[in-house]
Every structure is written in structure tokens, then in C-alpha cells.
Image (cartoon, rainbow, N blue to C red):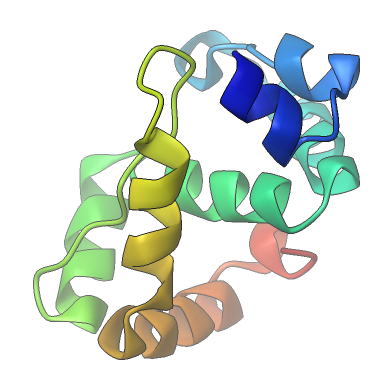
Length: 111
């Protein structure tokens, strides 16, 4: 948790954003995404990573765009999961795929 405290500036909001997307309604998902956006760039990265892995169709589309690469997922139990997510986001082939993916998915335009 201390690494997450550092990354999020000890933001209690950031640490409490743990709604499981698979059980949420559309309105809950949008509100959850807004909460993560308020955290800043890491929250936006989180939204993009979760969105690309939400359904088999999204996974397939992102793999097509990125040459088979999937974004790593952040979580609260792996101390280096944020590092893994950021490393996967910063790859040039993935960055290009993210730009196209966001253009195709209007819910991510603020991310």
C-alpha cells in the first residue's frame, strides 16, 4: 500500500475505488471511470487497461491494433503492477493502438 500511497499522493479516494466492473451497471461504470479520472494520469491509464479487457470482443480488437499485445492490469496486491501497466502503455506499438482504440470508443475520450 505504501507504493500506492506514493503514486496517488495518499489519496483515500484512489485507494477506495474498488468497484468490480463486471458486476456494475452502465451508470456505475461511468461513475467509476469518472472517479479514476479525477486521480490523474494513473487513473486514466487504469480506465484504458480495464476497458480493453472488459469483453472478449474488446480484447480481440485491442490485440488486432497492438500486434497481439494486451495491457497489463494494475491491482492492489502486486507492488509492481502499476509499473507493469505503465511499461506496457509506453511501448510505441501499444501507444499507437491506444490512440486508435480510444478514437473507436467514445467512453474513453476523456482518458
